[in-house]
Length: 151
Image 1 (spheres, one colour):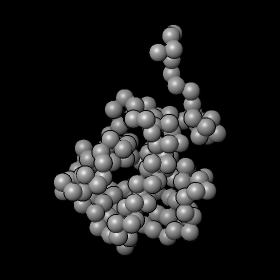
Image 2 (cartoon, one colour):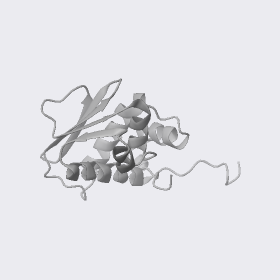
Image 3 (cartoon, one colour):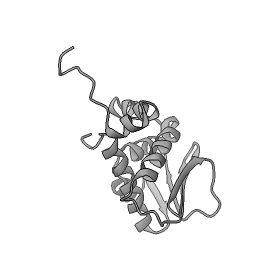
Image 4 (spheres, one colour):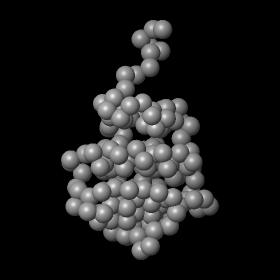
């Protein structure tokens, strides 16, 4: 094995958490095989990273709904700074983001610029735009923690 073909060293997050779901997400993002079926795993990683990160505002109380048309719906709930996620519909979300399958996978992996998708009407955003900026901050934090910021 040469240095060019060697697997990258695990991030500090992986070392702390053990190799697991984050490795799967990293692999799928790096190999461009991430699909909407992988969003629940991505959200679990996001929740773990955000709950462990002191820099993320912990006093927030927000409900994010992600609707994939056609397809499943996912959510992130932040209650007094504790992040949780799941599949299905939330009651009275603060933010709803609607998108098709191809845009959805790209939004979560960072391959699709959310602002560009919104401007081209490939993404529908309902709620205060400042909350959308928070979601972008969280996904950037996940990318940094998983060593995906170079992609």
